[in-house]
Image (cartoon, rainbow, N blue to C red; front, side):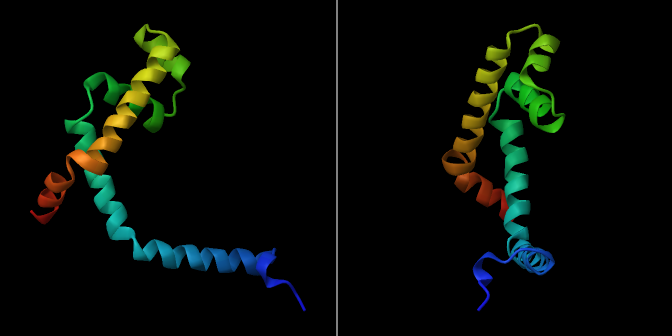
Length: 107
């Protein structure tokens, strides 16, 4: 009796691809809402320096040393600034602006 729990190979890859497509279709509206809210929080809740550093780090793929060299600051300062920005985004998305963000979605 074959052990289907740990199948490998082409059949398993095809099953996983089909499963991921099915799952993705279920939450596409949630993902688009989260993206809109994330952009709104980036604009309104994060400081300009945090936003700039986070965009350089995440969107442009620069490392912290490169960002520090560009801005004339130490890489540890870049790291702290990015972490603070991430915490602000988490708070905005989780607690602070939840009712506001939902009311804006209704518009």
